[in-house]
Image (cartoon, rainbow over all chains, first blue to last red; front, side, top):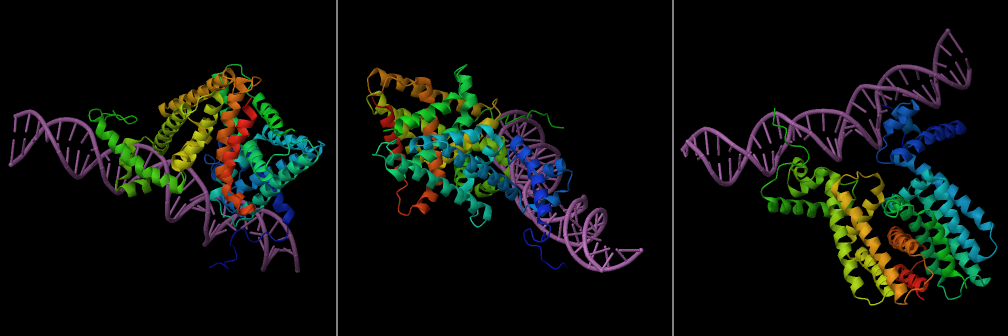
Length: 220
Length: 220
DNA sequence: AAAACCCTTTGACCATTGGTCATTTTTTAT
DNA sequence: ATAAAAAATGACCAATGGTCAAAGGGTTTT
């Protein structure tokens, strides 16, 4: 028998950089295929074939198909976080910062449709996930972080007079966050349909209309 | 060789009622298991076992696992439609009818969590579906129907003076529909998280807060 | 009573999937 | 050149969704 040291993704101890490069390489190809065909319709065999590797090799770098996918999800979350943090800085008062946060999320959706689709897929299945996995924990923390930002911005907006005083901060921050993610998600799902129903209707304006809707509801 | 008449779900020509009863029976059991374990984690073998049938029998009544699942989705859509149409009647002016429509959707989510989960799962994968399947076409039509109702209600609200005049009817109807579905969906995904973050926070109030938010944004 | 008919049900079987691991190939150190 | 260590392989496994020739069973015809 073997010495039984392999548990999860053991060994790989000394040339970390090389390993990270290979992981990146695999993720690059997986990203393409997952986005084209969706998670369920992509097989590890296909990813391996595309990479001209044996399937077993994939499992040296990622412990499962889910692990490979979640690594992409986590990359996406980091991109989203950067966009949001950066775009918030560009506005002065609380209201405008919040609106920029909404716009940032929309920008992420428009400019990184692949990462966006992974993040959404992941969010949709959060409930069923194993909360001991590091990637899952990390993403929970990121969500929490973003939620806290929103809460602070509402507070700031009330303080600087850009947002009306009668909003319930906790409820409003939750609602805005739910709402923004929900609107974008549903928009993505339905945009093709809407274009069929109402010929020539510029569906893309809906998301801008949503930002405007937010402003009207929040401003003093 | 056989006479090759079986294509999709052929035969079953003469005792339609008996067949429908058997379909119902299968759907009853499938509903339970799909809801408990989710679509991906439910196998046709397990459904058959629970029904004390052979797996092949399932395929006489449903052409595929998807077909069985979509039949449940369609039942759910019919329930939702009934709730909405009924609750709209209970209000007088356009604004209140719209708010009732939102409440009806929330009611569907709360009272039929199993059907709700099927409908949402289906909606999330609409984009990838075969649009020649009757069940898919039917559900598209139902969505369109609901969307049209909303459009008419906004018009009515502006007319009877309960809704402000400066809304863009097409955009607003789309936005409200996207938004309501999105908010409920995101709420469902995140309610557990929120309760962890903010101990004792009554997450369930968020959906009522949303209805209130709608009223404030729409009223004259 | 038995044969003929025809729909219904069965479950062994198939290709494919995510995942494993003994073996082989390649790299590194001496 | 040799040996030790690390990386890569692909045959293999159990389970999946789906198929279909064969068997079952109830009614009518002989």
